[in-house]
Image 1 (cartoon, rainbow, N blue to C red):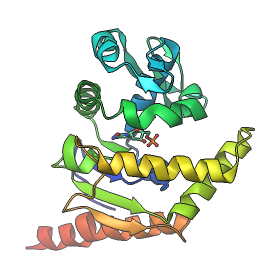
Image 2: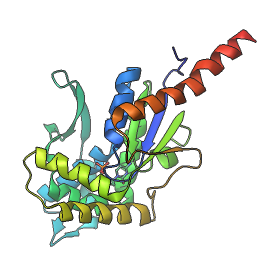
Image 3: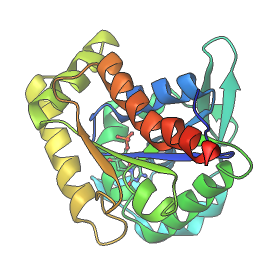
Image 4: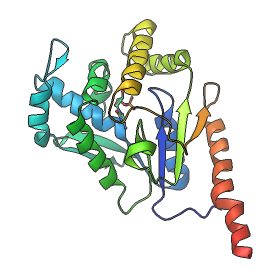
Length: 241
Ligand code: DC
């Protein structure tokens, strides 16, 4: 048994397809806490742009996007059948659509727009009020929750990440070449790491885990040891003092 703090916040950051969501979901299920996918929020904004003509010839109309930000309402609702939170854009379930290739292509430039980030960060913080969460993203440990109880930073080599994403897309019946997936991942890595606002970065106090050769079971074994060292034995010793 661990003595986990009330309203614990666990931040899981890392580049695209580094296995953040799989790992974060496994952590949420182990601890019985809420998993929040912050990338889904940026994806929902991107979908709004695509649907509303705010991306023309591959260029984002930033002034119009900023002007219309107050028309974008993003929420998460629990799906009892699938046992997960799903993303809603202005009342419509867009959980599947936000994973499509067009959204993946434009989400990095959309997520660079400062007022977009401000709005998403507010939403992310509000979702962690009064509840324990594990949230994955790019800036969760650095910007959204600099005081998070546990900060993890996942890494995996680019080929492994592209292979994971490729398999996932093929399984969904999406016909795309491995090279296109690899290009999208390298491009997003570059854009996410080099933007001026809240770039993808490992927080100083984050623990890095290279999961290139690890499955989710191995990662959870590693995580349980971490929990034990932080909230297990140490706490028991403290209570004996
Ligand atoms: O985790 P993901 O691949 O679904 O995220 C999609 C994009 O959203 C990613 O390329 C960068 C952006 N993002 C971000 O800028 N900050 C976050 N906290 C999460 C995602």
